[in-house]
Structure formats: C-alpha cells, structure tokens
Length: 126
Image 1 (cartoon, rainbow, N blue to C red):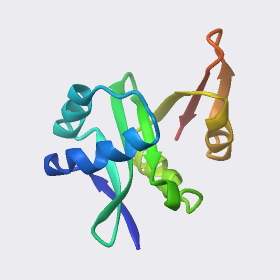
Image 2: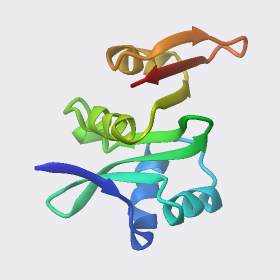
Image 3: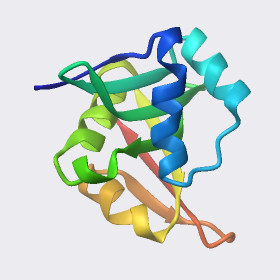
C-alpha cells in the first residue's frame, strides 16, 4: 500500500534518483535544502520510494519545483496522492509545467494559464 510522508534526510539519493530518471532539472543543493525544511514528500510502497515531490514555500501556499513517479508505477494515482497531500497542508499549490503534464494538472482541478514561454502555470486552492 502506497503512503505519502515527509522525506527523511537519509532518503536524498533515492528520492532524487526518481527526479533524475524523469529528466527533470533539479539542483541537488536545493533538493537537499527542501528535505531539511520539510518541503519534500515521498510516496513509499513496501519500504521503497516510488515517487517524490519537491516544493517551495510561497505566499499562501507552495510551488511545486519538481514531481516524478517511477516509470513503471505511473498511472496508479501516486502523483495525485503527492499533490493531494500538498493540498491537505497548504491553501494554495502552484505548478509550472509543459504541455505533456497539462492533462495531469487539469485532472486535479488546477486552473491553467498559458505562459509566453510556451509553458503553463496551474493554480489550485483549497
């Protein structure tokens, strides 16, 4: 059974390996800082990390810096669980993403706005 919780400092490497496998550009120093400040969640199944989300505090909420789920575990609701856990603890969650992630954020009820850069910005409030 998958459960979501705060990442532990000792889980830095497996949690960032999932982000790296998704080819997300993440700064290891910032990821380490997010773990130390309780701004990284992991989805764990049978003791193994299967997903992670890195967030940053902003006014009235958090911004998702990166989110990823192990490739063979995608489509099982794990990413949704990670975002919903953020929503359980914050009034507002903001994300910036490309076109391939748009359906994910739309399904979660984010208000989507196109950006001039060709990326999208999504906001969801509780």
